[in-house]
Length: 234
Length: 122
Ligand code: SF4
Ligand code: SF4
Ligand code: FES
Image 1: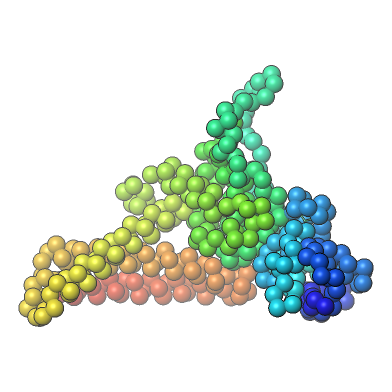
Image 2 (image 1 turned 90 degrees about the vertical axis):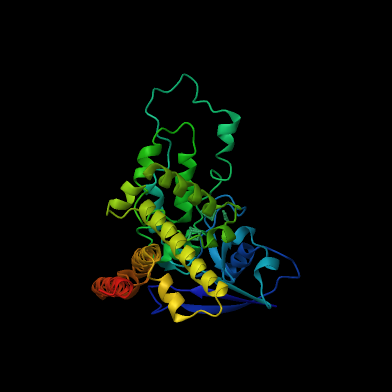
């Protein structure tokens, strides 16, 4: 039997959060952490968590699994269980609404700040704005982000200043539009990022890279933005 | 770049550049002093005093202590705005942080003045 320990908090009845222990029979199979949560929810229907696609595409089931942020649906027990114990907590650093569900407003507010859409006021061509294969290749490793928040909630700089530091996820998207040959707002975008907090609070700790379930590298993107900012300032 | 440094306004890029440039100055000074001590194992007071009365050496030392001053000011500001914040400590954090920053400013100015006094014996 696997020992599963889950963070529980229902502000309507609990004074404070607590860890609830479950015994779980894996039947010897290497199933995903989300499967465990689903089965436990049958046992205890009051357990609350988010999920949708169950295949690592929607980004809704980011949780802290045995100390590491990840998507429950694509994290197998073989990666998550340590010493026959599985510990599941909400993503750290953001307010908990209930059990494993966090309030992501702060995360989305930072995403909104970077204007996550293409800006190009020139008249649209008849069919589409074209890119060369090389220009398109620059967006690889950037556009795949599913906004799961695993990275930003693993970042100490984001924990300390979530209202001023954009965080790895937002900055990866900021660079996605800075790197897009069809976007014409590079200067305006850079101007809004040049303060000492938005980008420069990143200290290259690389927690974000370590946890990203899509294998993306926000630290590298942040490095590119930093270089663009320094170049435009000197 | 000098225009950037001269401008007192704090921006992300200017802080970043100042931290790197001052770090290089401090490294250079450290390598020089350590190298000098290794090259002169039987150093006498006379030699040491001669070295430090060279104008170029005094200016090098002064530049280094200025680099330390800028580096510490920006670095400590960055640490204080991470940890001494309303988010982590409640409303008293703002006053405390500003107090610490002012205290730090005094310490830095004290060391600067003291260095100048030692170097030029004013
Ligand atoms: S590299 Fe930067 S953004 Fe990523 S976790 Fe570290 S401080 Fe945060
Ligand atoms: S960069 Fe990775 S960890 Fe961060 S939000 Fe996007 S997919 Fe999630
Ligand atoms: S449920 Fe969609 S990413 Fe896990």
